[in-house]
Image 1: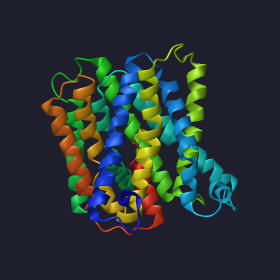
Image 2: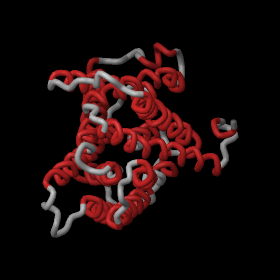
Image 3: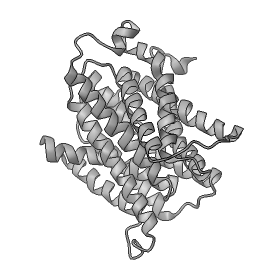
Image 4: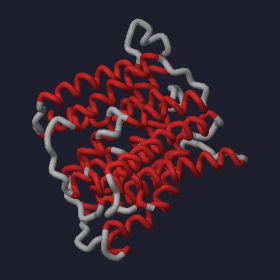
Length: 324
């Protein structure tokens, strides 16, 4: 079981752990699209997904250290801390995942994955505009390449407005990526007493509860009959593709660090494109491949743009940036 040993992990198992983690992230787009195509309501689906994922993540809170109760509710937690956790949960889970699932109703899973994976690009841009962070040459180049990749994924060209439904879905997916960037900036600069796993639990739980309230208030209803295949897809979406991918991602961060791990964030959209072709019969276009490749190159350039000290806060930030 060397794969799960922090002390014996070598570079090869480190890479293997990240490949499995990002494969599970990419598979979440396919499972989501499958269930949405079967008529499952988007808001309730993502809400119940993250209720299950939050409960499955509870035992992992012990990885933050100390007793379970102290890790989940540290002493010294103030109302300001609670408000920040709620805000991050609403933006990260309600905003990001709610908008993502809404976009999947009208655009391919592969396109949504490429657009959402552009999150590090928007984080770098927001950091420059609102925080005055420096933009080294490689980061500027990464921003330009990344924007070109998103443009390819969306299909900017003469026929851009030919399908207004798809265009609206792409806009919603872009809004999802921007929400992710905003929540990442908040998590990066907020000083919270919570460890990364307790933070992950609370943000998933808070965001999921808000989504369920919204879903039931707008009249969404869970289907009266769910067959074995659909339950299998839901459980895959909630456990391996959520808690499992986060667990492996966190394991890799502990050994290899945030900078090395972040260079693998180009893989989820690649896996989503491949799985879409085989499982959803979705065609692969050259524009999608070009867009995914450019976004992956941009993430690599941004990650290589300068040294970053590997503190627990940095690792927690990249953990948040890696959430599918």
